[in-house]
Structure formats: structure tokens, C-alpha cells
Image (cartoon, rainbow over all chains, first blue to last red):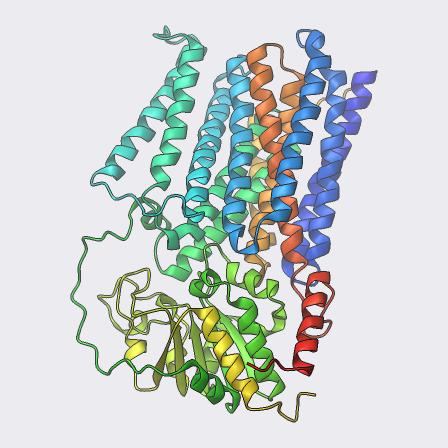
Length: 484
Length: 123
């Protein structure tokens, strides 16, 4: 009786939770409804977690004697895990968001892998089908765990350079194949088709070891600017692993939530890859090699440096300015200072917009969040497709800390590594100011002809410092009539 | 009457298929400006794995199973709590020009900026 009632309650609560999680994501369609969406999803999640303790009434006779200890362990793990992560999530700087998301994502993958490990070590899965699903979930979850940790280390600048070892991709292929073969052998041994050479626990340990190793090896060669894609892929992986383990545990809420995230991650991955004009396979399995050299045609024109104060004053008397922020702005923490300058321009009657490239930053949409943090209203932030036609009517395009996403070579030069990538048409504005620390090249390692164009002027310096000088120069003109 | 859930192989594939389509449609509606909160939000959603972790840990009968189950719940709880905290924080930052300062941090910053604009600093 007690078992039936608990099953009924758990089933109903999980059903409601699954609905609320989907509804929460549904409300993410607009910045207006999104904050309530995450709260709705949070309520669903909380209910599901609380209800899951009713499983105590349904445990097998074997686990009954251990129940008091298990309940204690579960409560302790919940409090420690949630407490630490909550504290980190509250404290982490918004600029460090990609690292945080990578880390929390890796935790989910690790949890899915751990569930699979318990099932496997306890020989709780029977039959070829469930066993294969468990192993697949274990493989994907483990790759997501170790890969996310490497991604976190790269984003946090603990690992500086992508690893380029000749033949690494082939070696990785062999490692993955070995992992799949060990998995297949486990299945054969479990259903009695083959005599195990090693004991089962050893086989399972080897399987997890290789899977974790593959996640590390797969992520090491991938460069910093490809991180948006990598994070999306691992997000999808974790979702998939959770969905598969949900099937093993016969829990439809896990299946639905996991698969939902799997689809979300896949969609975002494809969007990012499209915005970079590179295939997902190329990003994951081939990196921008330093060896591939290409002769770039001679560039006409010269670099024309100007003072930040002159640029600022020119923009003060312009009608419309479109700002193209890039990762360099985030690095110098100049978002707030940039918005101070923008507020001055707006007070003087200048129309200002922020044009965001889909791959600006280290994760999809990171630049939007950074601007939001600085207090920029989201109606000033426009995306590539909506703003690109407006550049030719704009008086000034202010490119600040961005490079490859405004390289006109992507439109014209078929030999360019970024050919075909959608770019922001900053070169079509009447005048273009480029704020840059030096004459360095972008991530793709190519010279940007935009910088040499007749209507382009270079403002050298740290993005935040340049914003401060521009602001001071405009303030020095005296308060305009429009601003009280 | 029993409420034991039992999902066979084919039913599972159907569930996965329909959910994948639904996910594709739901996520496709999200504007690019919200892609970071979307990603951390979906990250939070797969944190429901913690429920599976609790189930597994409660059913553990050997020290090894208990240890791994403990890790599963620990990591799953971290996924849920961290994912929620960062998503909620980021979404609270998005605001329109219409209603400028809902966020306390921004209200403070706006007030400071207002004071500054009244009495400009002499450099």
C-alpha cells in the first residue's frame, strides 16, 4: 500500500516537474518572460527532488538494512553539492560565466556516468538492450565530464595553448574505438557469450578510464574561439547521457528533460557552427593548424592612428553610431565604461546601437549578457541579421575589441580561412573607428583589410582606457542642452 | 493497482523522438540575445539527473555503490544549484529602456552616474 502511494506521488510530481521544466524553457522566448521561466522550472525541480525521497518506501529487501545510512548520505551529498555550487554560482563574475557553465555541465555528465557505474558494478541491468544503453550513457556522460573540465581549464586560462600534436586525431580515434570494444566485450561477457579475461569490475573500470581519457584528448586540441561550439556540444552530450540513464532507471522525467537539453544543445551547436561557417566536425576534429600558411594578397592603404579623444568628439557630433563589441572589450572589463560613453552620446541626441555577432565572446550570446550586466537595455542590442543593412546609413561604426567578425575578406576572398563566414558590415559605415591594443591579428591569424581602408581610423589602447578618454573628451565639451 | 512505471524499448524511442522535436521547437523560439541564459538554463534542466542519483543511492547495498551513488548525488546537486543560480542572476540583468532600474545593483549604479553627471569631475 505504502509502495503504491509513494509510486503514485513520485509519478505525479515527476510528471508536473517535466511539464514545468519544458514550460520554463518555453518562457525563455523573450527577455520579458524569461526570469519567471527559470523560477517556474526551479519550482518543478525542487518538487521532483523532494518527492524523490519517497523512493525510501520502494527499495528492495537487499538495500533495506543500509537505508538509514543511504538517506543520510543522500541528504549530506545534496546539502554539500548544492550549497557549494549555489555559493559559487552567486559569486562567479559574469565574465567567467562560460567557465561556470562548463563546470556545472561537467557535473551533470559526471552524475549520469556515476549512476551508470552503480548500475554496472551492481549488475542491476539485464539484457542486451538496457546494458548497451547504460554503457552508451556512461560513455557520453564520462566524455562530457572530463571534456567539460578541460574546457573549464582552458576558459579559465589554466591551460593556455591548444595542443597540436601530429597524429593526435588518429590516436583519439583509436582510443574511442578501444572504448567501444571494451564496452562491446562487457555486453558479451554479461550475457554469457564470452568468458571474461578480466573480472567484470576490472572491465568496467577500464571502460570508464578510457572514456574519461577520450574526453580529455578530444578537448585539448580545440582553441579558445571555438569554445562556444564545444560548450554547446558537451551540454548536448550531458543531456543525452541523462536521457539514456533515465531510460535505464525507468524514469520518464529524466528521459524528457535529458532529451530536451540534447536537442537544445544540438540546435545551438549548429547555429554557432553556421555563424563561424565551419562544420561541427571540423571544429571538433581539426583545429586551425599553425602550419597551414597562405599568401595573403598585398593590402592597399595604411593604418591611420587617431587619438581616442578625437574619435570621441567626432562621435558626439554624429547622427548614428553602431558599436561592434568583441571579446577584447570583455577582457579589458570595459563594458560599463563603454556604456557611460554611450549614455553621453544618447544625451547629445546620437542614435546608438550595439551590433552583436553570434560568436562574439566565449559562449553563445555571452556579449549580450556582458552588456546587460553593464546596464545596457536590451532594446539597444541588435543581432547580425537585423542590423547589417543599417551600417551603410550609419555615420560611425565603432569596432571595439573585435576583429575577425568584421573582416571584409570573408565576403570577397575565396582563399581566406574565414571565407563565407557571415560578418558585420562595419566597413560600409561612413567612418569606422577600430579600438585595438596593437597591430595583432585576430584568432584566425589573418590581416584584416578593414583596418587599412580609407574610411577606417585606428584608436590604439586598452578598450576600457579608450572608453574613459572618449568619455572625458566629450564631457570636456560641456553638457549639451539635451542633458539636464 | 500499481503505479510502477515500465517503459519498453520502442516506447522509449517514441518518447525520445517526440521530446527531441519539442525541444527543437522550444529552443528555436529563443532569441540570440538570450543564448547564454538559455544554455545555462538547459544546463540546469538536465540537473534533474540528481533525482536519478538519489534513487540509485537509496537502493545502494554495497560500500562501493554507496560511494559512487554519493558522488552522483553530489555532482547532480551541484549541477542543479549552480545552473539555477547563474541563470537566475543573468536573466535578472536584462532590462529595457522603458523600465530602467529594477535590479538593485543597477539602481545603485544609475544613482551614482546621476550624481556624477550633476557634478562633473574636474580632471
